[in-house]
Length: 248
Image 1 (spheres, rainbow, N blue to C red):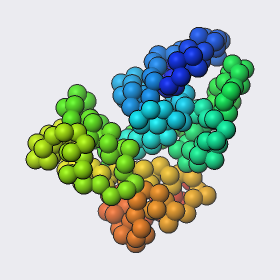
Image 2 (image 1 turned 180 degrees about the vertical axis):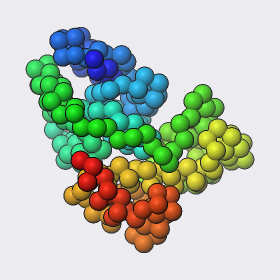
Image 3 (image 1 turned 135 degrees about the vertical axis):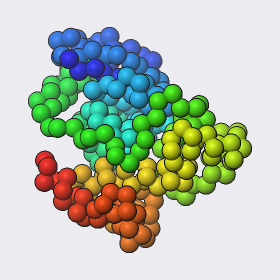
Image 4 (image 1 turned 30 degrees about the vertical axis):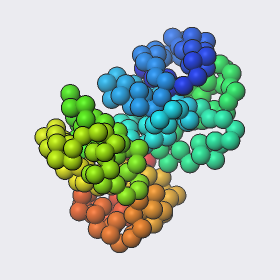
């Protein structure tokens, strides 16, 4: 039976999803609900659901940022995203995050049920392994968890320890100490690993170009991106893409 996490900021819509669908008949069970991406990220890390149903636009961290963070951590959960008409192009870009399906609001219970049936039909695909680059951190200090979430939300642009510390209202030295203690990495090192792990996930789509992925994760210099990628993975981005494509 698939376990399901529902992430939707509109209470009426969230209630309708949870209580309007015959989950048992679909071989599913709802194990958690969240009103925004940050809550969803925390629950996904704890509950490890098989399927995440999420809206794109939620307060604070949105659904796409949440899925990006989870993919970078190696979380293999299936995902169905819920989108308003104006978000449709944004929703299609989420295919890079291995989204199983997307539904245009307003949608019916039958639309959602059919999406889940399609998911069941395709579920024979082996999920990706846990992330080899990012640490699995259990019971981390609250500031460390917040710093990791901040990096997940802003990884594709330039970041500094000063910015993160100021956002969390903690001194740079204290945050650096706690982060290294709980993760085994410096903040800068973790940020780099997060970018490269995200790139690894994006490269699973054989249609995307290496230079496009470099830009998506924040690197203007493709050669520099390639050298970092090889240093951390042992493969060039192109070799990695060919290797994962041959596994499908």
